[in-house]
Image (tube, rainbow, N blue to C red; front, side, top):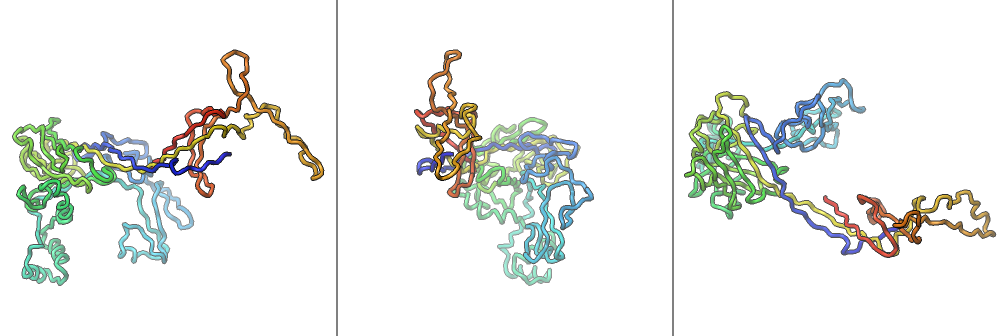
Length: 439
């Protein structure tokens, strides 16, 4: 086996940027991802073990149904439920799952099992935030805070007091908008529509439709200019939004009411994966029965998209919605150039490299240090083909390369590359194999 060291210019490291396209369709409180229906099997309703419209994060438990087999796993006696799941034994190390709170961990007896789940999935979701649910605690006076503290009997800091006030009195704080206020301000360099409050409207006093897109779908960010939202009533397109100016503004086009075309119905936060829809104009004259009996509007887009609304409501108008965008994935790649030089790699350890019968494995070899034994002569098989029938061309050292191995500095095999067909190698030419590794 011949070993060659990669030179400085033989290894290239770069990043490949790709833009995978993502498609979601929402109808009757069901989400369909990439136009894929559930694949049923004899074991499960969906062979992937996740709801329709979701993507599996672990890609385990394919075509597995959770049942009680009556068996246990290992000495710890973990129950065998016919599915793959992680488990830990509580000991003095303090290790636990992220889903186990510190209070819950303290109640578990040492030696007992803590279990998790690999049935983890992700999909887009929607949350409708009505205009009357905003409670601006930042503008409260100290006297108002003291009054609330006296009312509920709490003396903690302002935020704790108001959260408990929200629970006990029923006044809901728009925590999502509070959390997004700072990143929205960062996006304001693209468009003033991102401000929480501006001359274009105050999101704190508007109905807001918040669409969340997990990062597993959009990668590092949503590609600018690629996003499209469509609103259908009984199969007819009544409105479409797109970020045609690539500045985060979602501008309506192709609406059934042409006077609304050109209006900004919301913004998209490319890096964070959030869409905020505030368009409150009617798209058509149909009344819907989702969050209200109002006309179809952008603030109702995606109703039923993992937002808790039940399916099969006969009083609803037949509305459906689609979301299309391109994510941004950066894939680190390494490119290796492995060169087979002239005059090298024309010997093989494969027994077929020699003529049949030319190898004598029964020789006595070196009997003692006083005797000289001449090395046995071997005949290399001539594999040079000829265009003339039953005629052998002149002998030449010809080998065929079909495998290139990559080793680390310690001689450990870390990669194997194979050619689609053996490459003919003669002493008079050289070959450079281009190997690419995506990480």
